[in-house]
Each structure stands twice: as C-alpha cells, then as structure tokens.
Length: 153
Image (cartoon, rainbow, N blue to C red; front, side):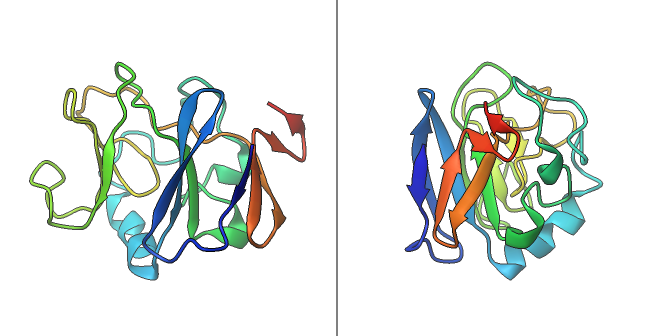
C-alpha cells in the first residue's frame, strides 16, 4: 500500500487502509514529539517489547516508534489491542479528561488511552501498544506500508 504524504502538514493525520485495517499516518509537531519524553514513565510498554498482532520493526523500537530519519512521522494500525475498536484522536494536551494533561488517542469502547507514539498508558484495558506495520520511504513524500528492507509483511 503506497501513501502520498506530501500534503500532510505538522499536526495533521491521514488514514489509509492496509489489509482491511485503518493505518494512521500522523505528522507530529516538535511539541507533540516533546510530549513523548513526559509519557515514557506513564505508558505500560515504553520500548514496545510486547507485540500485539505483529512484531514492532526494529527501526521503530524507540521512544518515537518511528524511523530515525523521520521521527516526526508516526505510522500505526488504528486498532485498539483490547477488543479491536478504533480509537479517536489525536487529542491535544488537556482537551480530553480521560487523557488528563497528556495528548494522545482515546478508545471510546472501554477507555484505553495511547500517547502520540501509540503506546498504551498503564492500568488501561488495552494490554499492548498499537501495532506498527513494516513500512519504508520510497521518496521524501511517498511511503509504502507492508514492506520494508526485510521484504513484505
């Protein structure tokens, strides 16, 4: 699945479909990225050690859960690891009472919350972080989801 991200501005998110699932592509602002340092201690699996339905690619096993050369770009499957609902968001810091002062995503089904790297907050129904599918950049404005340097998923 190829996606053109050329028109995606900082703070904007687009949704594409891959294998019948929504994949969110969020271009995070510097402020959004800075929020991840704060949430490191508040999330259940900060290093994405426990997979949901697929292994987190090695290049996304970091605080931003993104490729080092494009830290601003989050690519995650928008399916909650609790019962498969699709979370809402992203919400700005302080704009949603269930997220408190943190920005992030909220699953409306049972109240699981995720930071702007798709990491689930502690003590929520969702047991794992949102999945990061394999992906790679074809150009600075085009990515392919479901394929990376190791091959197709």
